[in-house]
Image (cartoon, rainbow, N blue to C red; front, top):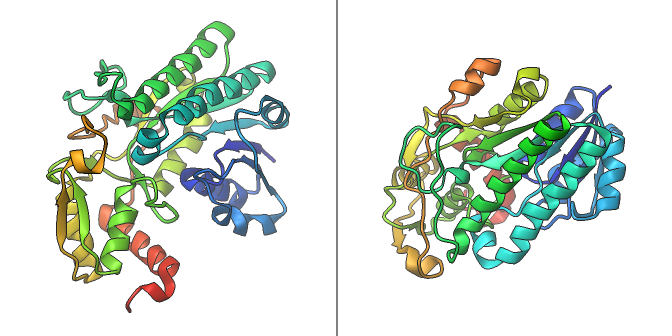
Length: 329
């Protein structure tokens, strides 16, 4: 019976990962300070008797050491997430994303535990070489724009993980997530699909930042969970950086909003807000995010299964339940 340690385990991806392992009969311990994670995400897992939530921070070396010692594999998902969080609280975000990873990697090395480090497509920065391949150069924005601090921090996290693997033989791998979506994702930190769905269900104007022509490739969280679980069991993945995304579901943000209006039967209208009004002066965005999936297909034969409309229908159903009486049936 495998013992799984998940930092950020009450978050969106972390809670789905914990749920999957519980269903497989494993024991799971989630560490989460609940700054962006939510206890309700994992509350149904408590009844299994094989799940435990520790409300603490990855910056607490003592608790991380204790939990790492007792696990078979660690998924380090804890991070400051969302554009709003990064822009509004850059110092706290940097401490969590840099120091937190340092603490977790040191503990994993101490006990030589297999560890997966979650990174992000943000690391590709302003590159316009599509699709994004793991070996491509990255093009970061200027350091006086806090929006890029997340990408810089995650890049350093990757360097640290690979250094531990190279110098100390730590069984570590890095995955770069591309726009993972599904039920339980909150829009509080700028996540586009839950925000659009909520606005559509309430017949509010759907707010699009910029001109809406920027595009993203969305992947269902269940496909992501399948991918990472298979990757940690693949020896050839150790010491690698691997994209996890869906390169067949690219859609502009404007078309995404229109699709959500169609699926919800909403009366919402589109409203466009210039970046300079939504964010601090000088905010920059990535026009496209398209993953190259050659490496992950070669390693585990990975192919995303869930299409965009199905993803949106699941998010809509979940959001209707969460809105309750606010939603006008």
